Image (cartoon, rainbow, N blue to C red):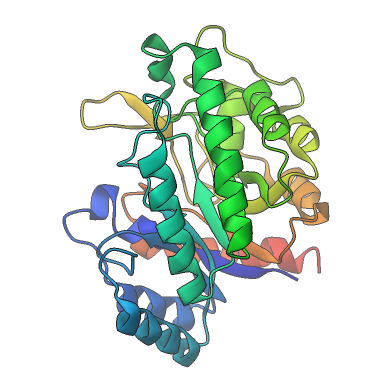
Length: 302
């Protein structure tokens, strides 16, 4: 069986940025819909390491217990930091460490990272230098996370540098720490392996699509996000491609049956699967539909 959660950021950023749904309301709805937990977007207005003091953290823990929910992970707020476009990652590492302590205080086991800068960064920083900066920093972060009893999961996606299938395997090879792995998101997997969205230079797609990509990453996948794709990217404020669109199940083109079958066999180290409705304009009303769809996926394979 799988425990099911959903990313709380779906209700705080993008279309919800000006009118976010507060954390208590989100969790109350998730309880009513039969969710097992929530994946925390660790930035305002939801609980986060900057706004939530020790007493507040203890209060969050007690609320989660009262709701019967658990945290499936933390999406750490590292987007304001520099990772690739600086030769000094001290601030990034300090912020990462602060988020590890926050995880410990809330009982969260896994912490998400990404490469922060978009793929266009290679116009400013050569790829070899960028690769060394990212992998050196993440090796250190994995050590810090291990000291806190946590695993680190890297979410590759079109909106961030190193988004080709070969990039993902190269970085995993360069960060061999046992507690470092990759977050497999079915929308990002589709856009990176099937569409080749925002690949610098020549697009690199795989003949076997997502199934081939999952095989390449097998053994290093330590977190899973499930959601649909329609072959397009979410647009930024200027109308430019940003990252993968995340559509409710059935609204896109992903053939989930073989992908879910394959992911079901993958030992990711825990039993969480997370729905990700990031940037979906009506995520609040789509949540129930998505929960029913993912419950069906699991029930068919029980």
